[in-house]
Length: 167
Image: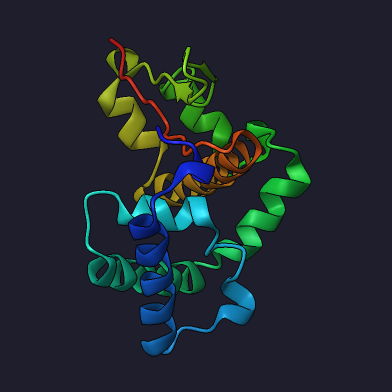
């Protein structure tokens, strides 16, 4: 991944275009400024054009608002990243071992390993409703976003999450 400080003028121009397009589409930066950080915006620009990225950003922010993800982010911060405090963690972790245990690659990017080969589908479906699974995943993915943004800002490099599945 390139260093954030070594971004080309084209990258920075694309980021500013995405910010402007978001505002032009009615977005409000007053509450969204933190989420529109450079690492967060760059993830939307990967394999995309600035105008498509702006549409994706706008849709994501609307989804975040509809699902109260800002409140979830505050709860995650208050938990200090303690996954056991996530809703339904116990029942999900009982079915998908090591769901949230992670380390770092030699390049410094985080990784997590999910042991899907150990899942008993019938028991999982009986114990974990779709709404529980969705709620848990909103927490999990928001934790990942917060972690990636902090890591990218700290290291000055854009990081991605490596997520191998295991039997």
